[in-house]
Image 1 (tube, one colour):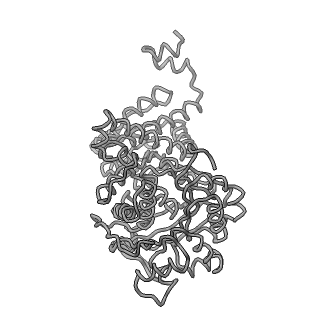
Image 2: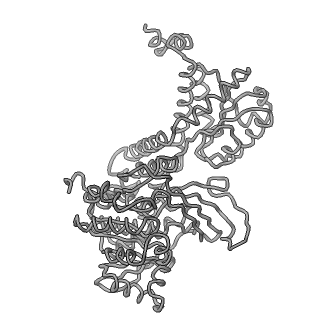
Length: 545
């Protein structure tokens, strides 16, 4: 066991998935067709972080739980996105990146928030017991509690990890997220399945899985008691939507009432959010009933938005705490990360420090996602336009308008002549500054701003080329662009998390990165730079004065 500085409260292996969310009017049956509606960020597809284990880990980390995840992924775009999200959430990882592909899921959500999920397990399904023991036993031993699931991971690998955890003295958690029949058919055999459940100290089956385990038992109360007796778990916990959660342990069987959500947008991952909150509650020293209350609060906060992973961490944590009415944890992490008002009052300038921390995390995740390919494509588009006599313009609406002014100035100062284009004025005559073949860099965080899209439509109709700088990679702006540069953030920072902060920093730095690529490609040297700065400190520095 590593020393206390290296101790993790929760370690786990299981599904880490890139979810592609679709909004549909209803979940279709066989041989049916239906139209997709736009999701929250515009366009028919919204990409989210997901996976049973990763969702749980994210919600547990929301409350300061020291979480570590291990297993197999691929060194592909989906894997890089997942790893950036884990890094941003403060989740430590021990990952083998030799898998064939990172896990993906196509999720269709109807008007009532119900969903159908189709999963491709990829590298997760390629994990073997040998991988687990050879590559991850030491990492498991760093934990106090071990968590896994029956969903995508092969049963023999799951069983090996559970046995390693028990050998190292960890308590164990198993989330039975699929029907037993599906697990046996797709992940292993019945003997291994039963052995996995027998290794669980804390067992969380879905209601459907519980009913299939004991089809002759009708009541959920009797089902959890039968499961606890059959598999020897210390605790069995089960969630059942609006009824809340059902606990069964040495103190008996009881329901913990659900908290009402303001509006049910998407039920995907509500059980994962519950379990992450439950495990965080245990780590914070809460008893089982209060841990379940915190789990219920997380589940309610989760269904009020699209996606299961807590990407808007500050807002979701505040919402869960707002709903929670159990005992206040004595662990200092609870008070230390409490509401914005309380923390700001206790530490002068705390809101500003948090905003800086959020921006630093977001920019770090952005840098990890960028592999340079899109920046090179944007540079080549600009160079082709310049070679044909075209020019560069930068535009945006609202806060991005100010970024556009800066972007045009920065590009011009580093050897790429560029002018600011006023988006709304372009619809009233300023479009005349563009000629066919010019390149316009359009900046929009969401990619759905109506004034920006009208300008883009006019620019394309006038023969202009388009580079989009946006966080809405599936947005109408991105769809209209010749090249899209990712400037997405999950959180803005600040007391409400609404005012553009991190997104503005991301947009500025993406344009700055594009300028750096262009500057290097055209060989701008210190003399060239000095010629563009005949006065000021930068000019003196370039000339060596």
